[in-house]
Image (cartoon, rainbow, N blue to C red):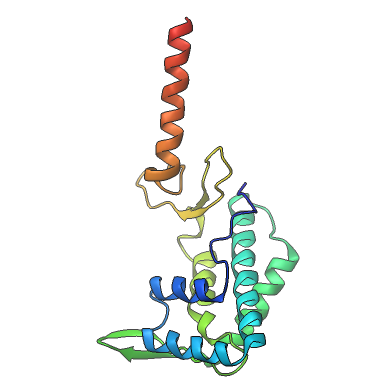
Length: 181
């Protein structure tokens, strides 16, 4: 179970930075969206809230799938509402020698979420869906990851973070037990 108090996308600016770092949209697209959001703060807040709702819906659906349970009805409804609103206008563009999503700040503001919605739907229903796992960190990390290991036995979101911490903790516990015993 993840820690619900951790929010790494504190505001719309952080969301746009994450989108850019994740390769969703060109720098020009993100600059246009940022300008449009500055001009319409209510639209900016609504778009940010939709992105958080989308993230939580994706998370709940994938965690339910990992546990082989039906996802919460609200999560499916939220995801499907956004999917239905974005698919009719899906478009790709050529930008700086690469194919990218064509993102626009017009409309209801969900155009820039298309790549995430479509990617999440493909992950949830595709051949890699059974490889989605939740980090087993005892601190409550809760991150999801796609287990691409050959044996399908990966336990942590990242070996350099949660995995190392868990292994160091086990080593410490064994050393303490050997000292006592």
